[in-house]
Amino acid sequence: MTARGSLRELVGLREFRAMWIGSTVSTAGDQLAAVALSLLVFERTRSVAATALTWSLTLFPPLISGPLLGWVADRFPRRTVMVTTAWLQAALMAAMAIPGMPLWAMIVLLVVVLAISSPYLAAQEASLPHVLPPNRYDDGVALFGTSVDIAQMAGLAAAGFLVAHTSPGLALAVNAGTFVVLAILVQTSVKHRPAADPLGRKKKDDEEPRGVLTLMVAEPRLRTLLGVRLLAGLAMVPEGLAVPLAASLNAVWAVGLILAIEPAANVLGVALLFRLVRDPAKRERLIGPLAILSLAPLIMFAFNPNLTWTIVLLVIAGIGGAYHTPARSAWMRLLPDQYRGRAYGIGRAALRSSQGGGMALAGVVAHSIGSVTATIAGAGGIGLLLATQATFAWRRARGRNDTKAVAI
Image (cartoon, rainbow, N blue to C red; front, side):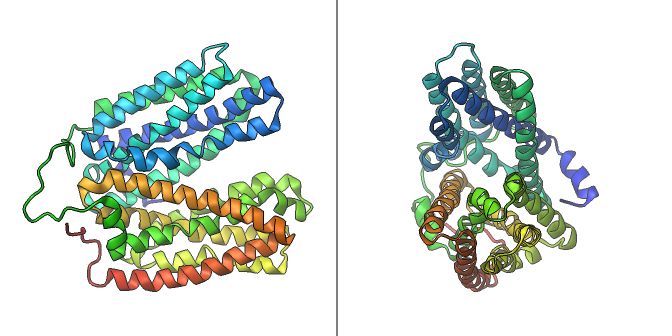
């Protein structure tokens, strides 16, 4: 991901190290909990539909809580927000692990746990520019992103083993423990800083009053960066169609492989990008070309590739997805501090919506036209056009204003 010296320097920063370790451990624990609860639902109901619905519930709460609760990370001290929400999540997850807890109560608790994760993540993301030196901010964001991808894969892999050999309740209890670790690490290692935009704060005379949505839409660089990241909804179409795609290749056993390619290739892409391109400004100039690379290979599915070529194309596209890391750091760096929590909540919800909506729409289209590969190729073609337009828009928006904060 980063050069070895840079990695040592990042890990040597006490505040960053605590947030990084806590977030990585908690992410892995969340995968344990998701698998455990899904298995519990299936064991008690023997309903495939109920099990699928439970798994889908892990995706929806942040779509609502992100825009609604992101303000908490701006209005209150961010360390306080992180510690408070982590302890709340630990208590709720521990309650879910109580033997004999009714399923409906466990599902309600899960929804609440996922909802209050939004202010935590908003506070964490908005804190990174203060925790990291300016010349290490991009490296820190990249390490966070790749660690989350690896933790998700490791957590899912460990979940099957742990749940199969022990019990779902133990997996839920382990996840509760990860939130305790997270809360303690943040409380003891992250500095207290005043709220960025406290309740009742008087605006400065030269400060233009505007809402966060107005800022995100009106500022060309912020608008373009958000737009290019939302292309993930098209790039993830193969993942949404993984099962029928594997079936069309007469390789149902490859479903897991197809699902794992995107996060694994993304980790590889970020590692290559940060090793080969050390200058953050140059990485920002590559956002557009890499976005194109993340979608162009999908067009080749029009030729019905075999399994080997399917893997090759998805790996190339996944490597191109590395553009999200410099786009994410540039977007947060451009935002005024007092808007970062709210903007992150809205941006995360928009990104999740594009991913979920893109996969759902792809399923409808594939069913309608009767071809999985044609659907993927169509998504690639549309994405290529949009990514090309976004590349030129980003080049114009940057102009001579590279990485400068937005004036307010």
